[in-house]
Image 1: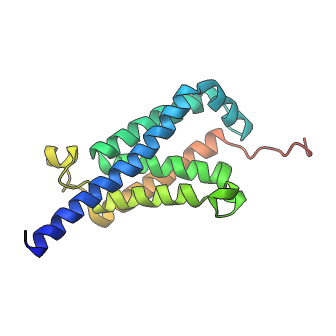
Image 2: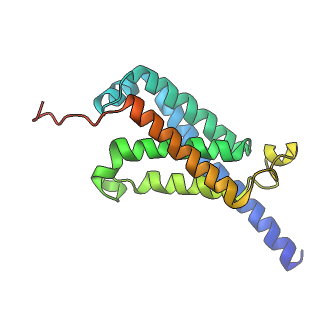
Image 3: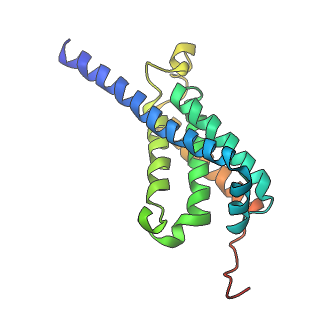
Length: 174
């Protein structure tokens, strides 16, 4: 193989790896939420979400669906937007008040997953994807796909937070 051809294959493998890791992580989150639906609903209620059972079911479905779509490279910018939205909700409702580092429940982890999802959208799903097989990967790509993933994800998160979430009152103040 020549240098350019090796570089092209390297980029394709990198896209696939990034999609698999981010998507697989999100699927794992969704499966965990689905397996412990009552516990997940209780947790959603404890962090200030109204209709916590709905939130638990929705999070499981969105995480499993968006993660699987990312792994497959199907509807890549929309799947990435769902990941961004999920991570923005998590950041705002739980992690931001705790600072940056994940060791203290900070936003380090969710920031990395959201950023990686935007990168996947911007880079495109690559050769080994459903989007490529269907010929739709070239319709929305580059900065436009990254902007769509970031913007749509943030807008969806803002809508969910504004309708369903209120910062919980600390126990000593209650």
